[in-house]
Length: 274
Image 1 (cartoon, rainbow, N blue to C red):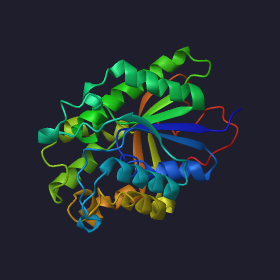
Image 2: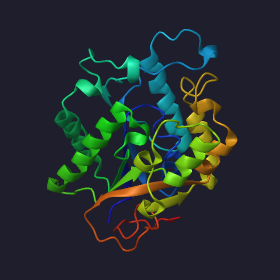
Image 3: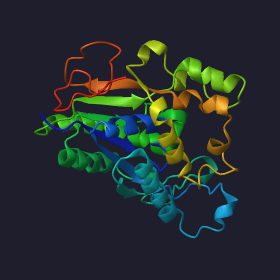
Image 4: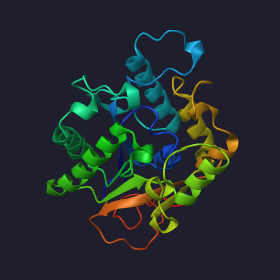
């Protein structure tokens, strides 16, 4: 039996921190091999910390921020696919041939599949089908990573399970109600029912690491950002537990909800699933 291995696939530096940073740190601390794939370097992101001054190369700075965040979480350096951040809304980069919105989806799938073949993960993690809040790069990475999970069935060692980051409908309603976060998004669409949550990971032990990882992304957590100025009551639950839905499985699911990502899988190390 092999060392437990988890492959996380996201779009931009900082995508790994708030929704699943504690889970990555949790499994890394138990000896699982964590591979983080980032499709872009976040070129289109705004710099929200004025103390950074004029940033000439946003991509290079955000790449280093992600490397620093990974170090805080106790995982190895990220794998960059080399595509460009598409931006969104009025900043959508329709004319950039390397922006993920303009790249052939099957090409992105093939690049992810190459990583799968190399690191042979037992489980994969990526965005939910609505990309948390509908960012076009999130949606594309979700589709490409999901497709790669299914394509991996043709490999010698296919991925056994696929998980999605998930925010519950009730959590989303609470954030929108009194806190004004995620305003304008329908909780029935962007949230999931409690019975859809397949794994709930307790991460309070790793809250300091998660916080350091999140704020390593200085460009995105400055005083001009939504992420960096969220009230404590918004982020409190995020430092206590993280929730995930099940996107696919090639093995029998021993129970539902599962005790953790590797519950019932034949891995060499018995993991503490909580």
